[in-house]
Amino acid sequence: MIKAIIIDDEFNAIKNLKWEIENFCDDIEICDTFTNPKEAISAINYLKPDCVFLDIEMPEMDGFQLLSNLSYRDFDLIITTAYDNYAIKAFKEHAIDYLLKPIDSEDLLKTISRVQKNQKQNSLGEEVKKIIESFTPQNQSRRLALPLVGKTIYVNIDDIMFCKADSNYTEVHMVNNHKETLSKKLKELEAQTNNSFFRVHNSYLVNINYIKEFVKNEGLYLVLENGSTIPVSRAKKGELQELLNHF
Image (cartoon, rainbow, N blue to C red; front, side, top):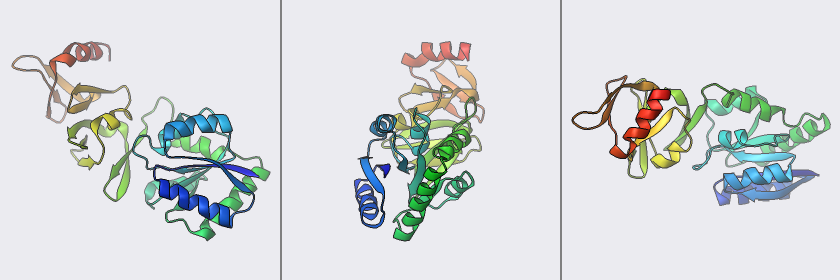
């Protein structure tokens, strides 16, 4: 019997997939389901499932981050998503199976058949290792999922120059002067960035690699490589200067 876990931030998506599996798939048991990625990480490490159905577009923590935070990775990974974009096609190159929502019963059966074959060949976990190496390599820039209206785009985190809060939205300004507006708060995006980013102001998160000047007279502000000026709060002045001195 194959032990499986379903992870999706939408409860109805979990309910529908679980129904499909229970009604069309033999020899597979759903041992748990999660809408909270952090809880799912603990469960995977503890339960050690044979298979994980993972939604990659989740607001608090995307699928890539979840995978990179696991200590147990010896399972078959099945991506579930509503978007058939270039990133999903790339998963196929790394032997990653995926199911497009709404999930088709025939596609599900084919995917489960592959999981069963992998178990017999003792090849569990190979695709998980490949996707982590591909999208979150050690000591290299990693990719970041940016949820937009009707789609999610994937960018190199070092291609982001700064982010600006706009109520419940966030403007992401890229090095090529392109701008995207995300349906998530700045603090949520801040949690996904690396040590190159610093919250210089309540409304601004800056990639310090692109700081050209730190102006301290007539108000505190930064000048970035593209000429943008970013205000710096007085509460952040000392911490920012210390960071710049050692970066």
